[in-house]
Amino acid sequence: MSFKEKGLLVVLSGPSGVGKGTVCKALRKRGTDLQYSISATTRKPREGEIDGVHYFFKTRDQFQQMIDQDKLLEWAEYVGNCYGTPVDYVRDTINAGKDVILEIEVQGALQIKQRFPEACFIFLAPPNLRELKNRIMGRGTETAALIESRMTVAKSEMELMQNYNYVVENDQVDKACDRIEAIVRAEHCRVDRLIEKYKHLEGDDGQ
Amino acid sequence: MSFKEKGLLVVLSGPSGVGKGTVCKALRKRGTDLQYSISATTRKPREGEIDGVHYFFKTRDQFQQMIDQDKLLEWAEYVGNCYGTPVDYVRDTINAGKDVILEIEVQGALQIKQRFPEACFIFLAPPNLRELKNRIMGRGTETAALIESRMTVAKSEMELMQNYNYVVENDQVDKACDRIEAIVRAEHCRVDRLIEKYKHLEGDDGQ
Image (cartoon, rainbow over all chains, first blue to last red; front, side, top):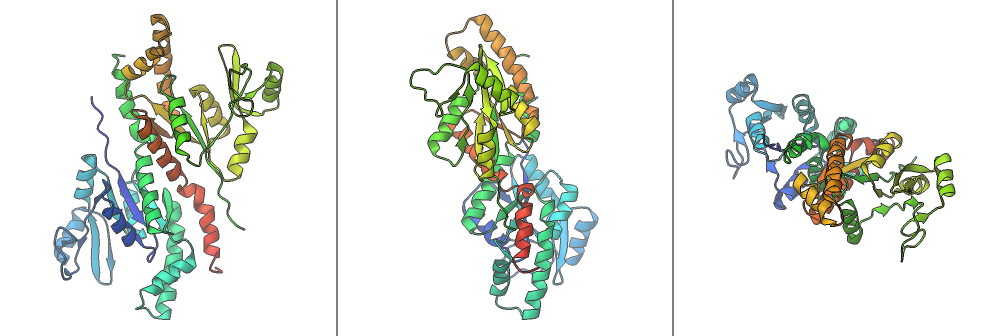
């Protein structure tokens, strides 16, 4: 009879260069109750990276098997390596009543929306496009042509915002984290998530 | 061309005895940016009550005129006196980009939903029905029969929760205020409220 509230799946995404990784790291540092999903990848471990901590390192065959067995919530290939989100960890964690946050590219977020429409989709947005260009240029390693092509991609990624529930401006990392924390807290108060709990509450009094 | 974000209309309601007034007072003390609407009433001023501060005091004729001229967002009669929410203050304040909070009975909240479906409806709920009964009894002035009849009303009011966007448990006033503040902050990040802003943002770069 008792009502067990499920955890939330929070999907943090946004155009490349907007600072998803930085915001996620800052959230982690705050020690909030959010759980962080670990990606599976076919990329080779870099110095200091530990299997099961930073990534689940997989061979191509193992990764393909995960795809075939529907064990990935989303996956994509970047620069010759595959990256994906193992579905078991996400399901187990939210069934245990804990919130999970995924930091992923916009294409992956759209894949998740197909399978987990009840997730909370947060789009991290730049304060303006000039700022986004500065950040893409700031990596310092790209040619002008590559920067322009990245900007074209980023602009088309901005148009995917309408598929999300929330947009958080990344004007300052700390403010962006405050907003994300408020969103998670507010989502836990949504009537459609809690109405079952209050149906049981009415039984409290023997009615 | 510039995007001006409107303020939110936040409607805080819930069964009688749940502590709406206490929570609203505590929110006010925090000095948040919320604006508080002042009700119009036909009730006579009590000692220390100031017209335009605590209430707008109206004669029956004046109140009736406000109803006829559609100047009230909602109104109701309690114990022979009329109470209502002047619509002008609410519209002017949200058009100026400020958030307004209304603390009202569930019937009034439903009236507002007809006219302002985009408002943010928060249902303040008791941690359990025994607690609600204690609070109703705690006023100390009611007979057993009156308490029972209030409980019957309160239970039917609980069923109106499904018309709201959020439910906030009033287990502790401070926690309830935290949740309400998070909800207001999160609502300001909703994509459907901000998508216009980001359409303009895309113009920043001359695209």
